[in-house]
Length: 399
Ligand code: PMP
Ligand code: GLU
Image (cartoon, helix red, strand yellow):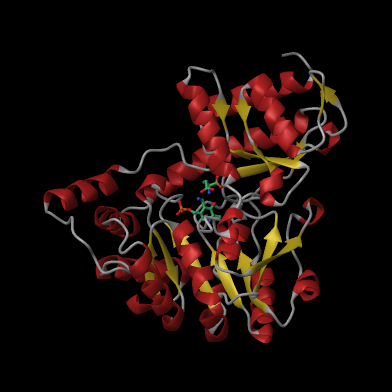
């Protein structure tokens, strides 16, 4: 018998964000004084009214299977949200509720990719996109951007990578890991390009409410019926409502794609957790004022982090406009010796920083951004100050 494992599965690398987070948590459990900036997970608690809706659902026995693609009440709440926040009209059969936006994205690529189909992924990218595309037998085509251009691609850049095999473009605004946001005009141009070339746009809008400096999120699907039909919006409650552990994400797409995704999900996982679905209705329909509170804290942390990084010799970063990440440029440390070791890349920087300073950052390599490490500022100001103090000492060889 041949007991070889699946070559496709073997080719999938582990999520570097979750790997760093696991390392951080295990160091902490051992009593090590470590500060973690790994996984992007809000440090706030889930708002009380959301928890209460879940407790009520348990007490009322809402503990059985729901329809595989989500309960009608939550699909309707998602439609109301899309109308209210994005001025988009969708009907419930166009919505699929999944086990987090990560699962929604896996469903999307599974639904749209045939073997060899190319999916354009602008880099820096969130770690999971290329691996998800590979899992779906698609081919990730990376589109590099640079810090000088705010990590944004242009239509000319797109023209260079689009081929007859291009099936989709991944758009993530605000972006994880760069925090950049495409303007309404830029999005309009991207929409025109997608319509002209007949390619899907997988629009990951999970950070839509975490936008600062008075800027506003616009969904690319809102520029007319043609682009709406080609767009698959991915969103969820993890970031906006501090609900990472509840695992509820959703998509809005044309009904044909939604049906295919629902069918796949009906065999893969059945419905997402029934109680978490009720909690998600409370999140979407309930008071939204706690988002503003969280945003205020994020802005304060971002401002401190950006100013402090740029004041440290050898480090720099651009000011992100959304999400809760900062990409720190560490190129000037490469080739230099710290604690008897020469740093040659972001993995070596992150490893040595964790070993010597007990500070956990995610290396840029996992985001297609060598030369950078990612901070998440979804953690307390106290941790941020401590992390930056330690990194300053680390770079001065003072530890
Ligand atoms: N997209 C992006 C860009 C993310 O950063 C995350 C974070 N986990 C997700 C999707 C998935 O979120 P979740 O599965 O928690 O809904
Ligand atoms: N999306 C968050 C991050 O990038 C959480 C971890 C993950 O799912 O990758 O850190």
